Image 1 (cartoon, helix red, strand yellow):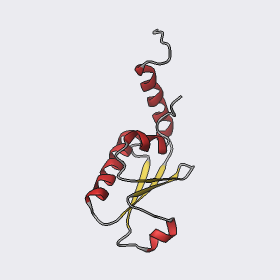
Image 2: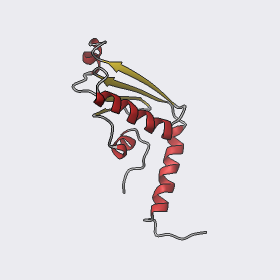
Image 3: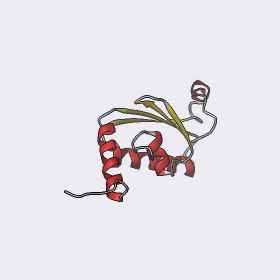
Length: 117
């Protein structure tokens, strides 16, 4: 048995693992809106797949929508910039704009990381 003051990196890592395990049992439905196969679009896809494969493997559905091929999707979902990620499930719905390179921000937005105290 180890004693800690609750502020160690080990405690934070354990909290993170527990939160990930709880959330990984939920099914995630994600839509990523991109505009063509630009460098920024490809980075967003790669970043998102890495996060999902690591934190919710086999518990997510990812739909990638190229707005240059499906322009009507822009108005349906109020897309104002690309790449835009929409987390449909689990609720609440969240929209994240950018190349998804800020890993901590994405984990928090997907509710895969405990909020800072």
